[in-house]
Image (cartoon, rainbow, N blue to C red; front, side, top):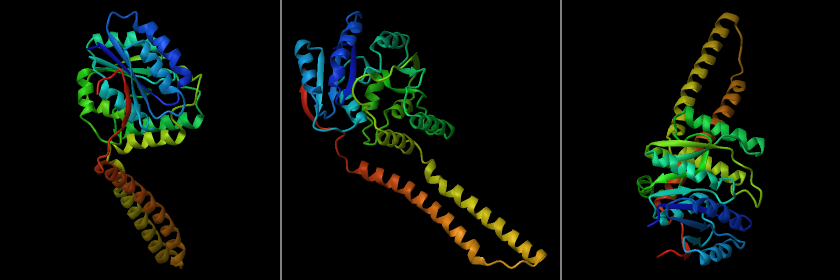
Length: 310
């Protein structure tokens, strides 16, 4: 059994795999521990799988899981974690934005007794300003509302102890936000800070829409706060309505003013229709997720394994 498993999901990363493997081997061959690399081909349409198979034929420590189609980054990660067998497991992306040279520092923290070690970015990538500000807003909201204890400025580059992995594998919900799920487990953790480089080859794995979906998964999977928004909006609306009513009564009694009631009612109706649609959307999110979970479908389907036992 290896001492270290490294799980790397890939989607159309044929331009990065060979260089990634070289950098990983340059780091891992210097460590005095046994290791395995587990690549997950998440339904790539390029030569990602063929490139992995070639590397695996040259080194049995390189293993692969090929999925039947693209199931998404979080599901692909879980596919790799399900096949990891080591005492410590590192997850990282395959786009060379998670520097392999950081692995010894992650292991040092693990050897100090921390069960989870996060690689924490010190910088923001040169993303579109909208992505950066939405990311800041998202983490501000979940921290303020105490929705999740997921640390800020960390992604999926982390080390987990075997004990953490076994607990995580017991959580089989389909709507997965691994950052929040791992922090929810409550194990001791530490950080290793680094400057995250920009992607050089290929396309970003997450589109803007996928990032929004991931944010909503993190928000709705760990909190019922949105369901309580109706209470606050209802109370606020009642207070506003009472305030208008008292004002109109006072204005009528003191200033003898005549109000056309329909003018006020039209504005109030439009406001309440907006509130209603927001609440319907929130309710729909939860109902949709319940429907998604109760179907009980597999998180992923394996098409092929390389250097792995069935």
